[in-house]
Image (cartoon, rainbow, N blue to C red; front, side, top):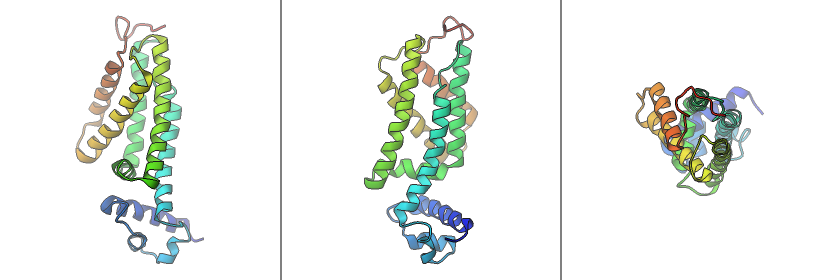
Length: 208
């Protein structure tokens, strides 16, 4: 089957070409040319252009899934307002790291995922559904605890997903000199205020 380094070279080249030309305009010959290997070598690892794109996206999504399952479960944890704010910051900060490490893939997936059907629709909508369910569950728990007062947890989850997905890509890809610490602070503040976070007479007050 060949060396792992060859497969990695194909993946890195595919990401680069997908980002430059877009998925639809990219050919397998473009990928192998950029990787410096013969076209037949490509098929030792991947059945098609769709297959390599699926693997690239699934690796990124798996990283996000691990993050969100581990972190989103505790997104609004805390017995005091300070602890809740800290939890929200931790989720945002960790997600920034995953996006920064996979920025080219995130840009390809979210830029082209809405406008294309087939494979894009499958991957994008599957990812979206996973994260919406996780966020909705945590907003619902926070609402039951009585310190979030947003009327509809499902709608809130869509708002939060859209806020994070689009704003992170904008500030990391379009406006590349963004102060990420400031963005984290303002995003956390926006999320908490948007969900009508009740600080119970001060940010150090007990929420139980």
